[in-house]
Length: 308
Length: 282
Image 1 (cartoon, each protein chain N blue to C red):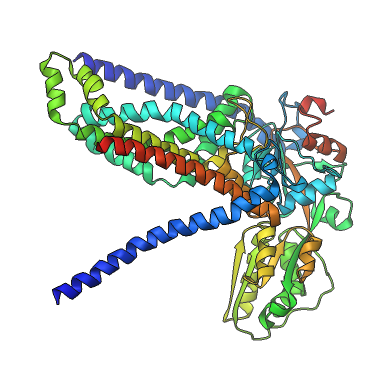
Image 2 (image 1 turned 180 degrees about the vertical axis):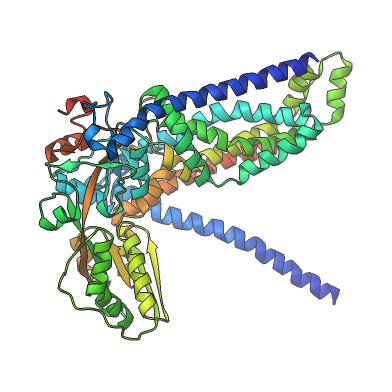
């Protein structure tokens, strides 16, 4: 009898403990709620309320195309190499960066502009310029990079050549522009199906991958009997498999390195992509200068209060 | 005729056995053949150094070794007491009706994919730690908590049958000497099942050190030396998965060499396991 009482007491304690835990998580969530509605009604935004917290820097892993482009453009990369602070959290995909920043009020990260979701996180202005397709196209938004596909001349089938032709045609470029990327060739001719059949394999960047899926879908809709297989393993892997011949076309979200060009690859730039610097939606900050971004990502500035 | 059938089947079984051995041997040869020359190419001092910056040809994996050990130790602190006590409860205290619910629940825990655990950690544990500590919420503490939960089914699954295998006469003897139920269980049955319980713990260590996807999502993955309970860290497994996608040349070789070090750790753990098992057999 005594034992049963004890067990009951213990389980009651556990339940109470759990409830307390829930209550704790709910409380700050409520305080965040108004911040989210602020975003939609910007005019009502109250006095800037910078979170008095250490900055959580979220970066991509070494070798990521996004990281490579970002550190180079922001001056985080010096002659001594990539100087990204050692305290930076590392996330290995665009979506993980976005969800990490969305869940941490003190976080700052960077993702491809095409993957930026304004309902989840907030993109900052860089040097007073909004991160938008128009500004990247006009060249006023500083943080942008090319999307490149590459192939080995001797390994490229007629089908591969036709697919590249499709990407660079008005139809293909329209799909890229529709996804928020910046088309390379605005005056391209329309694509007409060549009636080819067969299989085509692509491999590479996780940034290029999603839009490549759309391109492939559209291409397969026009050309029946074509199967396009797209693997998203990262720029480096995609380029390596193209060199080794295990896939026909590689996708990269950075310029090819000279050693990769030496291996016999032909690069084609299919679009430009901006990199959005993102913060949590509860962050009152609207923009940073590139110098401030550099200082944050190199660890010279570690607290939001140090930023004016 | 039956003789022929038996001989044929004999070779079929032999072939099956050879396949699994061949797989292990191939992995060993591939890993060691690729990894060890790389270690020397990079330089042992560099490879076991403290700075990992592939872009500057610095491939120090020491922080990741420490990270793996910390995370595993943390998981032990969380998981071992809970796991052993749970196994004791299931084996010696649990009413039959409750057992019919608890046992499948524990088995189900083992079947949950690790990425789901990771997602649970990211969505539930990280925000809680974030609010309680004021840091980013990703780090040693969170990873230890989550891994502690993840190794529970491994520990319980091995420890519970071991406790059940203890001859009933031990327990009855203790009762006859006047010990209470609790005392008999903890002073007689549990010590008698010691080696089985210990193997469960060692298997749990193996699971914790090899866990990858869940840890990537909640450990922060910083390349620096872990400094405290709330600091982010990177384990060897996460290092391989994080950078494999984009690495080329010597960077990729260094990741394979990281795999070699991890492999050595797993070998050590498995040797411990067989030693414990061997002692039990005696």
